[in-house]
Image (tube, rainbow, N blue to C red; front, side, top):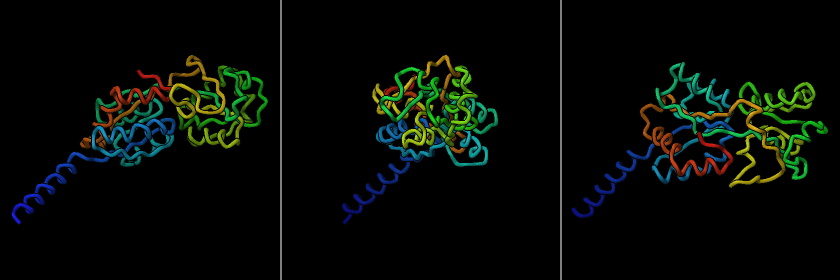
Length: 251
């Protein structure tokens, strides 16, 4: 009986020990990074024992939610200016901000024959709808407007734009055929070094401001070991391979 009691106490001690190291981290993730974080989460959980709980949306919308007290602990933004603004507002853990990825913008069509790797179809204007993300909330949407400005097409396509709340919705407009083409994140249509479907023109970086994507630990995550572990994991070589496989560049 004593032996079984000792075994029981040992099991209870291990349960408490594992509970002490297995924490949960609530992460606000920019919509363009949905597929990469879904690929990263199981490896992160296996490597650290911590659980990652992600919410996806537009960077601008997350900014408003965080300012209004949303309990996110880590923020993976689609730009570097929004985390910097939160930092200035005192909403982050000092010194925790860093660039985790540099994004690429792509003009994409679900039709494999629609785009020929150039901007010719965009300039020809023989389409009814062009999807973009809300430029006020989504950095990839802002980059899309900068490209249209640079090409002198802003006025010509104004009546054809369909605007998604975030980059995921913009991509869905194209995927479902509600728009013949649209500006989306390369990571949404790219995997393991190649286009997953449809046809595309990868927009030259010089045509828009750099899409530097910063991560930061928010005040609610200041004392959460899982938040610190996630940030360190994202800086490591294992995460780097996954991030690059979705078409991102590393800083």
